[in-house]
Amino acid sequence: MKALLPHFSNKELREGPFLYRLTDLHPSNIFVDSDWNIKFVIDLEWACSLPAETLRPPYWLTGCSVDELTDENLTTFGGAYEEFVGVFEEEEKQFSPINNDHSFRTNLMRNGWQVGNFWYFHALDSPKGLFNLFSQHIYPLFASSSQSKDDFTRVVSDFWAPNVEKVLATKLRDKEEYERSLCQRFENAVVSNEDQDSEH
Image 1: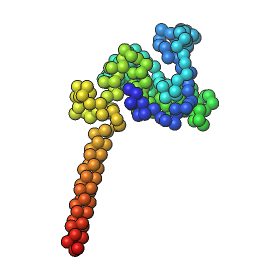
Image 2: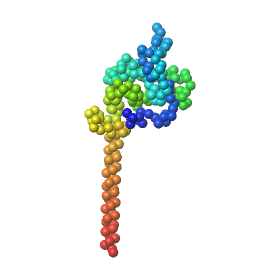
Image 3: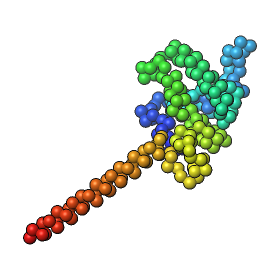
Image 4: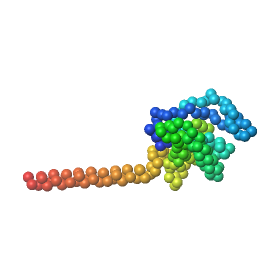
């Protein structure tokens, strides 16, 4: 997971901003009135400041655990995610901008969904769900569709970069071309030396 961090984080945000977050926020910690207005939030002892990119909508918006968000559940959650982010953006615009951006937090969440850091940071937060999140949502971003998950136990090079097979194929072609060029130079040098020797 550590090796994947550069793909799921923006190095420009390494030094902040950091956002104060409730890391144990789930439905049983939120008290609402009869009109569903939030009145109280409890269990604040796990609150802390985290990198801005870890901000994301709660996984439980559709009533599923984070590692149950596959297939039909994932489609349903995707709609809830967009709805949440849309409402969040309306609220965010009422506050002072961060980095001159009135949608800074919203853009982080939208980008996190597109890039996949929603899954990455949830996997880090959920040791119980890490394996499933990795195999369901993170592994497919890096491995080709023809590879079986059993290959993971044998090779981890897929996680060097997205589309790693294309990168590796290019590097191997470059290496072959370099070796061919190098051999040609040595052959030319030998022929040149033989020509000089025959002249003497």
